[in-house]
Length: 471
Image 1 (cartoon, helix red, strand yellow):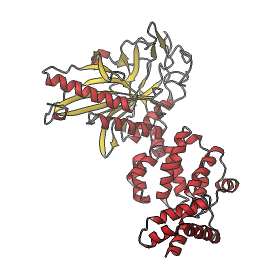
Image 2 (cartoon, one colour):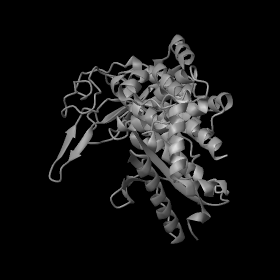
Image 3 (tube, one colour):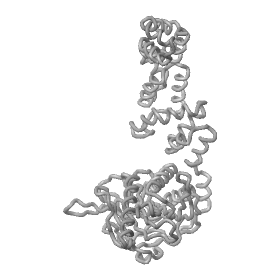
Image 4 (cartoon, helix red, strand yellow):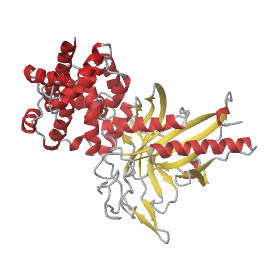
């Protein structure tokens, strides 16, 4: 027996921090990086007599996410207390939604497959325990930060697909402005429920939950390790025990954390300090009307209307700001594929180099003006890259940069012809070999002519002149 003899079954519980400025039930800041316990108050510390007040924007963002995932948005949802002990859980319980969540029954398209979403519910986050070897300290800055928990059905069938699901979901939430997508800061993390069953079996295997995975790589590696561990236990005649496990990336292994709790272990009951959440129909209607074109739909439109390859379309729709800049450029520039090449090439390099599109001083009109100079033969493609790098730094238009730096291509026929004649005169043996049938030497001649012109010659016109003179 081997892993190939088993079907892997995975469901993900994704915890996404909502992009609110304040916490779910109080006015404390959600800003990352503050001094420990700086963003706290009697409400988020769970002090006696402090009462929660719901953050309206958090509700709006939850509705937006549910609509984008094709969920049924519930008119009424109910808050519940989930009772358990963590040192960094100040109240000794978590306010969440249990039997009546805000959204149910959606789907997410992942590489051509529809992964079912079981439910989406709102809840507050716990704090953070900090261990330094000798002491453990608690930072409550995250306590009561608003989270959206998005629970999939066990539809994922490989570690790679699970990682792609998380990436696709993350990109969608960022696109919607629901989540900032920062895995390093804990804004998005997930738990993976993993089980295996023999091919052809009807019943699912016993699942284990791997907690608190905050990178695509760790998610994939944790699942891969857990699958091997479960298969090895089954092949050895042992039982897979339902439990919660942690992934150790340093050792590339999962370790038992505790036995897996069931719902009754948490002693859920309705939250007595909060009324049921009753949604205003106008709020849902407004969010539905204002929902932007989603990445999957836009990628299909790019392929169908602009003729872009699927890969180009997927890259251009991975980031909303980038996609909107591409749309603005495409409305002004006729060649979508050439435009896409610039976006996926030099522009992407500059975005990565400068830490994001928001750090580039660039708009659609300026970028299209630069491409028009390339098309007109005013500047070469290589020179245009230099111009673009200067444009995004200072926000200047392309033409003044070209003139100031002397980057304009030489297109004057007399100057080009003089350079070509000089190259041919200096290489009579190669001219003879070319005329004898060695057509590959054309590239050599073009290179020599451009070198003679200081790299500013128009390559297309140089090539045309050479072909004429070489017969």
